[in-house]
Image (spheres, rainbow, N blue to C red):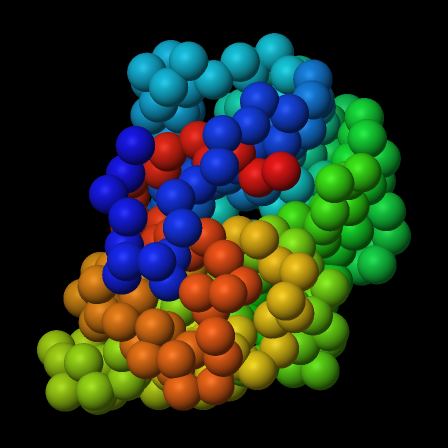
Length: 283
């Protein structure tokens, strides 16, 4: 088991075989998560190379025969680079917003047969996978039809929101509705502004179409998470302008100013950049 962080404020992950989440990688180096409810699983993004994907699932004893499809948040390479090869190899459908689905047809590993695997879904439509009902919603980012996903199950709603340029009313409503939440906390503002990134890249990150800071993430989570939320994971941390300890400490300080999280018993984790997380039991 992982060492507990910040004493009683952050509980250990629960053990469950019915409802689990594992992040194979998070950050600009690659993003891919596997959500499982009972005997069905989905991938959310496929931004790790296929050889690395196969190595990780073997090492972690993850049963990929349960996977029913890949759900893509947007068309940047760190979220899509293995999607085409995985679809071809395992005959998994790829679910994506219409513009993203079209973009994947021009992937360098695509072929004429890829169209058989692509499933274009309008933002807001639902896809049923076993007892999971998956719905997309719009997220502002400098990509083509960027979305987050809310997954309803008999034991609660899992929501993933990453690559956020700014916090919108839609994002706030999705936070309020989540029981299990994966949410971006990309950079520390002082580290970014005083760091080595070129000016144009700093501007892109803070433009409202790039990413959100630790401070922004902590503020919105503190004020809009409801008391029924059971699990929170911070994701897509910058390798140069952030650290897991800093993201957690920023969140901890903001929480303690406004809420009694010891009484609420929330599990909080950080999905480390480029690393496979433990398999978290969610129910």
